[in-house]
View 1 (cartoon, rainbow, N blue to C red):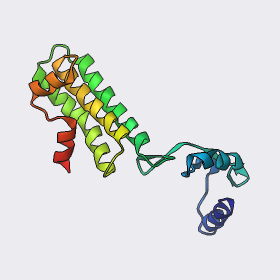
View 2 (view 1 turned 90 degrees about the horizontal axis):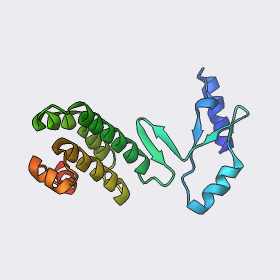
View 3 (view 1 turned 135 degrees about the horizontal axis):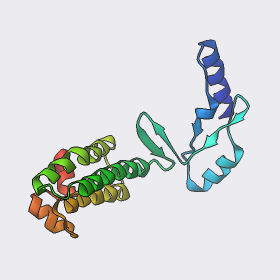
View 4 (view 1 turned 180 degrees about the vertical axis):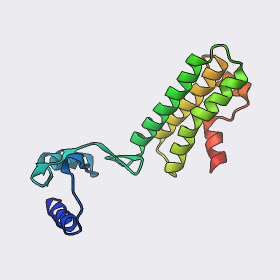
Length: 166
């Protein structure tokens, strides 16, 4: 790894590019029992040890060590839940139709963007998405149960909505 980074540094300097080791991260994607061994070795660039991170952001997508997509999904669903929560807190006196419009406009885009970033997400990532979707429905209807809220709104379940998008 260090040899490859040295080659990259040479390439960058030959092409007048500045390599910034303080902004560079290392992530090891290997079997769980090898990760500790890899992390202990360390990676250096310009005589600076690079920070090892369990997840990194590449072109807007959060990649985790096991390549499950959970890091990306948890961040996107967190944004969706916060947006739906903000709608719930700020729309006490709005009718249900307006709350639904706000949740669909502010919260759902995070879920749909996240869904399109990975073709077949793992089960845990799918649970995050379903929780955020159901929470939006509960906030709109001001109920504690998801099924009655989905029925009242006429929304599909998350699994059916996901099937429809594909």
